[in-house]
Length: 329
Image (cartoon, rainbow, N blue to C red; front, side):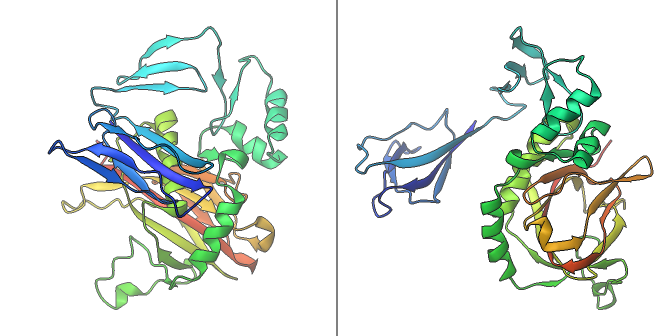
């Protein structure tokens, strides 16, 4: 139902290649777009075109198309599995090729009879180390986007430098609500982190939200409102940590109809720039450690107990975002 046209770059930045749209008043509107500009519109309802010839050597752009899973166009194409899904999750058509999804993340193995050792070899060939490959094969504690499926290292470095310049303040607990002076103090033996609030529609957060939506469709299928209303840049210095906790609030409050349902996390600096600071999540009372190199994305249900071990050297730079939805019934 919604389309996004994003201009990425061009051979001559001073020249734009406008897109035209017809408004509800039946008038034509010219939209000039420089690099980084985007226009959002109802692609199947709004008449749009480019009538002018490209007046430069080249231009790159990105088109995104979003469909309401409960709307009139509710069918989804999954390219990696070559099948079409309707709004009830039923398969409309499927090729003869069979896939089996094993482990955590969107890593697929074509042969359902592939041995565990062979699956591990495939993961390690994709760039996982042995510890991370073992984690993936244990099951869907989290949903991971690792290596090329994560955020490019160059993008991480760009935003790390940008976020470092933000005004930071000590992170609190429980949504950072400060009702009085006493509530504004957090025990550093539990949480010792500096943070800054981020815009929820751009930068690293945009990558996290997209990954969380994709992961939710693949495994949990939670009822989400599709919105991220909180994202944070987190800076862990020496002794910085966050003991085991849950991101979800369990209180009953009529003023809070929506709760955090999915958390999405990434580390935006190189792992050799700090020691300690490993993210962990509990699975059956056991600590497990997802892949967490620079740009890897970890998505997990917000009610899962998790934490960050103390930093012993250097600084760990991370970004987290949360997706909300109505309370579980």
